[in-house]
Length: 601
Image 1 (cartoon, rainbow, N blue to C red):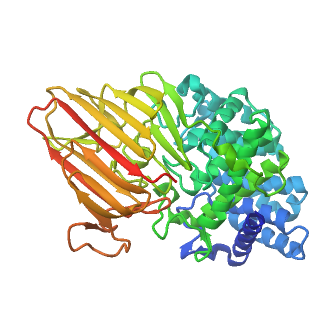
Image 2 (cartoon, rainbow, N blue to C red):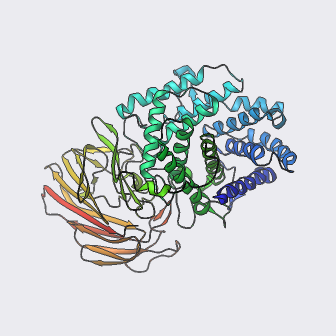
Image 3 (tube, rainbow, N blue to C red):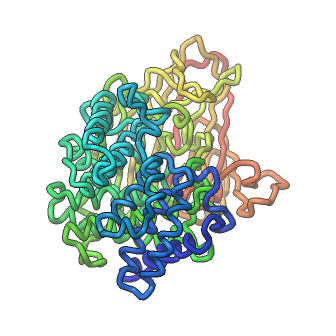
């Protein structure tokens, strides 16, 4: 574990000196660090630079040069756009300098006057319109709260606005998140993803750093979030596996939630805390061994078959390096304050993984529609089945589909609308309807043979638009069966006379290799998934994904990333298969299903 601390220090110190020496010309892996699409980078640079100078270089021979370097880059960064998260990071760095007694030494008077103007929450909150956010999703109330709180502590404004802004966030949660207390980023559309679990830890971290009062609702939400991550804990050190901004950020979300809960206290039992810290160490190991690419000298979420969503595209490479490393050291700081100052895995923590529930269902909301997350633990594998609605823009994206996900086994391609492993009903007019957005009832039952989930939908979803739209007149019952080494999905559709279904279609994609099709079944010669068999879809056509993105397939059975994207957060998919079956005219009841067989890890 000593390697983790040394690696973080090396990476962050190297980043600091690059920022100081290269100034505005800084590039990473060929990308200009301060480009127009990296809107948060300047504030994040202030934050990391202040940390490195005070935590890593303060007692070294380089301290005077480091402080001079910091003083030289802050004026440059202060003139760049900050914007929301950048603003919060920038003011966090200034508060760190003030607390250590170095603010006046690091920031000249003229630059300070400029920073007081630009590091302001009012740039995205309309105070005259009852503190309404200006074109931002509701989680940005948390960002505004943090900025306001730091401005109060820096004596830039009186204590008042931070309370109001936090109250606006809590009102939104109470209004749209219902009795279960999970954050819906939308106004009731049902987008429950990584951020829904992460938000209470971000608020708690700000509360702890600024000596604020922890609201009861945020504590309750943090308790729930922390226990979700305990259910997801694994030896590989991977985190969230569905939704947007996952991959490296799906992992560090667990870091943020578990460490904030540990420092706040009163949330974990002794054994839970031990498990949480062991899991944290594995995540940090993954950050420095997997996500950091020595050849690139950077976090890698974009190259060698890896991909993230457009929000975190490679234009933000410098910004993401700054963020992820700061998340790691902030997590370690929380744990140190909770009494864990040694970077060592607690002895025997892996055995506590076996004590976690094999089957869990976390309900996010239940009113007109039922939303939740199924977690199934099988040996070292942890399957997540999201039963939600991504809402506008995201409902049709593969990472939000109701598909069992396991990192490195079953992953959705970011920003892609392939619909892998979900049935498609294709109408005579070409419309495509899928069971993805409007689950009215979720039932779960534990059985001797495994775990069964039943989802009922009174209406399906019409695809191809920016927002979900109801396809009334088609209902469905979907059953998932989790068994040892097997996942089964069965769908039964009832179709009224207003719809004329032409065909039913299915596609699957996998990291497994060497596909061989035989009727409706495809087998794989290498990889975790050994076979995938579909029922009611007709015969399948298997394909391999060419690993060289520039290759163009010359014959059937091969596909290129030039034609369709197969890159996931953890690497490029290797193969897949498609099924299509023409239905008889006027068919009103359609039954289909699939079975995925895999090697349990």
